[in-house]
Image (tube, rainbow, N blue to C red):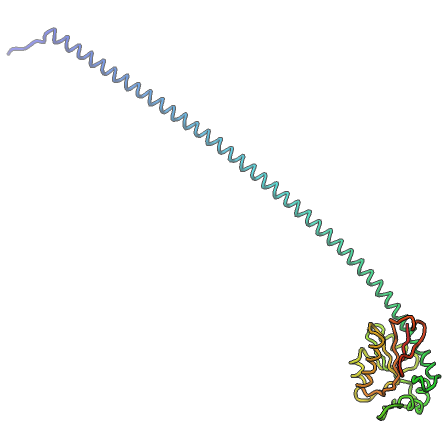
Length: 290
């Protein structure tokens, strides 16, 4: 068997090939190392970019928190300002309420004072009116039949009462229950405070009194013919004297009272011509100023 022995040239070629392969492998290794280093650098750059992004996000978040805190602080200040304004408004309303309450109390006190004074004046006027009426009745009792208001003769003698109240009447006149009874007065007084005082004073003077609130009440009290007043007494109370006299005439006409029944008006408003004196304004109508 023939064995071929490698030649020297083949060995050298093999060595060169091995060297080349080794160099290629080294170059490949170095290239791989460079790629690894580049990858490492890129990874570091990516990490740096991530850190920068994270820092930027954190800075943005801090800025947002600061902005939110500023907004919350501004809202708190606005709410506080609104609360102060509301408190000021409440204090203003309370102050106004106290002022109005004080004013109302002052007005109430003034009204009470005026009412007390008016009540005192009414009581005094009523007393004076009763006294004036008593004096007028006394004068009428002593006067002639032409005065048509003879209360004294009506009290003591039924004959004079018949002549005084029956003159000019075409029908039978209703008499008082007893001939010797005291004269009866129909009193028309709208004021609730004056009416009982005047009634008391008249009854204290010896008269019988029918107290009525107004024209309708007077007519209702006289319906049926059970009472026939000897005199009709009216308070002017916000009306003219002519209106009050006309009211009395309607009461007479509606209730069947004799037409010549004396009518006396207590005048609160009158002219200078009536001041300080009693005036006969008609055949049977008299005005007593107070």
